Image (cartoon, rainbow, N blue to C red; front, side):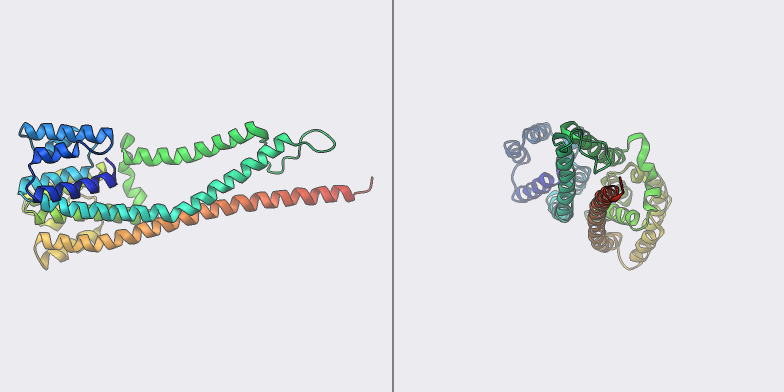
Length: 341
């Protein structure tokens, strides 16, 4: 289920549940709308509800279709009896994330179009070099220096570009899916200046929102931490769940429990510790959730700006390279023509 679909479903679910609509009827109504795979998933939820099973357990059975955060918040709502409130807050949070994602995409759309236009211009030049020939016969000079000409040359160019883009996409996909334990490299990723802390802030913001909602709904700290770590969608953060549980059972504070996970930066632990002394765990996490939400927005803005700069600089360097190469060949031709026979 995509982010947009999850946000809309959460809001519809919360509204209907608060109005007193029967759970089975609610889910059967959901099963009549949306894409085919979504209708199937909702019908399975309705069938589980008919059998008397909890919704979050039914969602777990359909992993990875339902987002981790949606499943976690459904579990919090069902276990505390505040399902409609949990889903309302979740809907707002998901909508906010959706808006942030849309802003990021819109900010890099024009630079991506510029990059596509640059590839298009190169493709046109390569094609022309293959279909045209100079007056004296033979092939046109390779003004780009790529050794590519004609339609086949264009296809090779697209293949090279596809391999480059695909390699980047594959690395990102492998990291998100934790292929071969890649998420264990997260601490190294966080060491990258500017970019690393930005990614870390976005993840911690998601953790804080889930934690604040869990504690406010009445869930105990051990379960709250486990659900919140799970909501990050990262096995790196999930790995600290057992250590946090053991620390809390030993009488540790919330801050020390989070410190035991060894996955959070010291400044975050310090902020949790300070916030704990000024209010309840739920209040402290809600305050931190709002603070890190603002930080996350700034982080997304930075990342979109960085992506824009990287794309534009790449396009500019390509254009400058080919301009200087063509200009150099032009000067070389003039020099050759001016030499005495």
